[in-house]
Image (cartoon, rainbow, N blue to C red; front, side):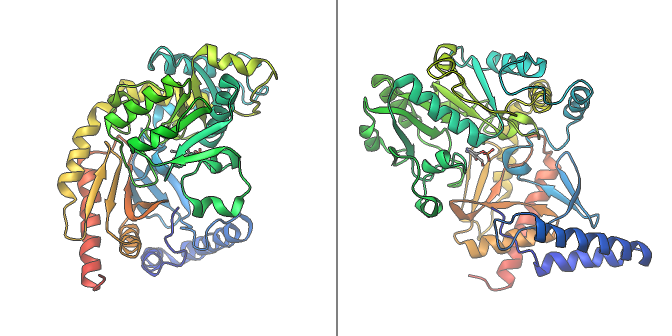
Length: 433
Ligand code: PLP
């Protein structure tokens, strides 16, 4: 999603000035290693963009990343809503080390009792409504989406899957089939049949949901369209419609979960409960982990006709579960979720500039709308050069992404906003419309 240029002149200039401050020998060795790594990256790592960001990260802690040139970046995207308790929280690192000393992978998902998995599933269930009591751990968010679609088909015996325009649920072929934007889907057709897209937050669109529908999959708050929240009435009407027709409601909180919106789960503020909940990203506190969560009775359909209704080798890896368990405990014990609204308000108070057309937010999750990708891209590049890491949104390229670790301090918020506003001024000075 990053489009900041690999040979971004602002960034390169800054790096060069840092390099020149060092003794020559150190400079020579490091520039060789740096150039070498960069060349290898471009030559041997599969690229999905003509202009990857290509920052060489050598360290991370709290809200900061550090690159090979020793430059620090205040990270206000947190690995795209992953690092909710910051990079390398000490409790997470300790849990990873402790688990690594016991065992790593032992057998494919679901056969052995592995303490980190079991304990994490119980902690999640204790913090969810009683009908969301059974956890299937996966490798990723996309695999959680796949699992939920399969589960809905098994439970209902139906095939029709409804999703929404501008939805993002992952990049595997099933998840791609329900992605709400034809530009991103088209090159990969044929995709999954009987998948349909409805208008998000639109009452009339709910009429298409019927007794033929297996499930409706929605992001509780849409992420990649630039933090778009539906009305409470609409989400409640969607819940009602699904219940009336025996349709499973799947809510994707892969970005919205784990305190991001100021609640542990975004659906809490809408007073509804989904039949299946999708989690990922912050679920693993920096390690790869996803999950689909449902009632035990629903989940039981994966045990027969056929058995092994969903198979994964690494899903629920013990080290990922140990990290996630420690991370979720830290989120709860250190009370970061409760601080979100205050921090959101500070961002919104400070982010005022004639260049900024709107700031949409849902907790510590914001889309700063500059009206054009060209302006947004230039502001993102200025921010990067000034040591602030941000991004744009897949379906809202005119919007700058803010999704920092929830641990971000008031001083760090002030610093981030100062840099964004200075970038706005710099763009104005350069005469960009
Ligand atoms: N759902 C949402 C809302 C996401 O933002 C993402 C990833 O960005 C996914 C699903 C897919 O997760 P993953 O990239 O772990 O497959």
